Image (cartoon, rainbow, N blue to C red):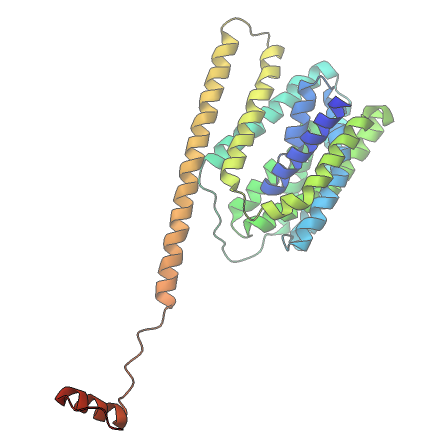
Length: 328
């Protein structure tokens, strides 16, 4: 029971992160399941089965808050489903010994990408035009394949690519990616069901992750408007990097002083990324404040000319100047 409560908390925290960043539910959950000793294929299968419920709840919540661009969802979800089904099939056919370092390497790489991505200022300006299907299709295909084979990756691949395009509001990028993930999670679960059978899913784990995610989904859709993604992304990236480095070092049979030195270097890199993220956040907020001030100053009307004096006002002024009392 204690383990299930911990997993429910993991699902809650993972969904809060995912709903606020548009990524990292699978990364966070799969990383912790691997640390707990769950086989890579079973971890990814269980996470994706839980995501069917959490992404549905997240999609509804984002839709109600106006965070979804349905045109993008329809053009990225189907290729993502194809890629996820193919990735689940590949991962199901690999032995646990071979899959563990492969999955840890994917998660480590995605975590490092989060560190680098959120250590720099996030582009939030928008340019004209719409995202084309020839861009969204391949993006969904690659993101879906990485998501299924790595136990996570749909958000870390799709969300930054859409943000960098500059053609969507950040909140709509996050909402659209989260909503389309419902189709991707369903396709991945089907692939794992065919490759592993029902025994490949850890149903108590799925239930715990699902409960935590369902609780957090509406709150995360609201938090996306106020939580600084810059700091959250850098923090999550560091956790994922350090956690999966343990699996990689173990699979490489590196002992002695190599491990502590590696951990120290990674921790130093994480701290540097957090510092850079704070600086980038401050610069972004300062730039926005200056732009808002300049826009308000440009939009303010010129000073209105003085109204012409009325005859009564002229007479009162003359009487006051001569010291004569006001007329009755």
